[in-house]
Image (cartoon, rainbow, N blue to C red; front, side, top):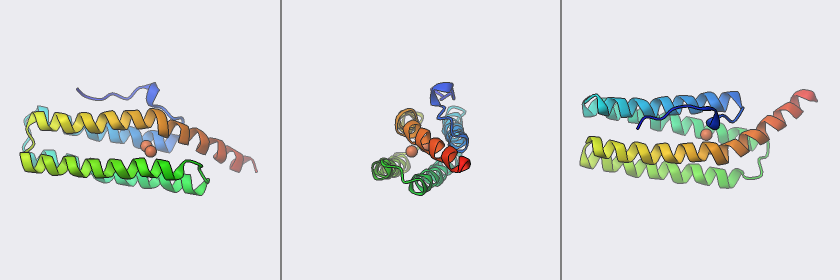
Length: 140
Ligand SMILES: [Fe+2]
Ligand SMILES: [Fe+2]
């Protein structure tokens, strides 16, 4: 199943939303590469891109939270860290077992489900807070 962006994923924070769109696009590239029978090299290339982009995105979110003293910063950061570990393990399994369509589906569903869930809950709450703080800052 490919993932689609829709308004339920919108946090209203432009930078965060744009990065989330990129994450979903990267996830879909892996699904497409696998479905179109692209070789392992292409699949791992798209997966490496997603991993790198995810790490960059998490760092950006954490910096924003630190800057604006987000009360749930430590919890949010722990979710990110746990997810990075999960992605690392899944990638390792994919390398060991080879990127069969089944394995790619397992990995992309696990990543996609986590991301969508995280965006709609934790990120939405965080972005609402950051937006409020940024407006306050602009007004002062
Ligand atoms: Fe996010
Ligand atoms: Fe997040």
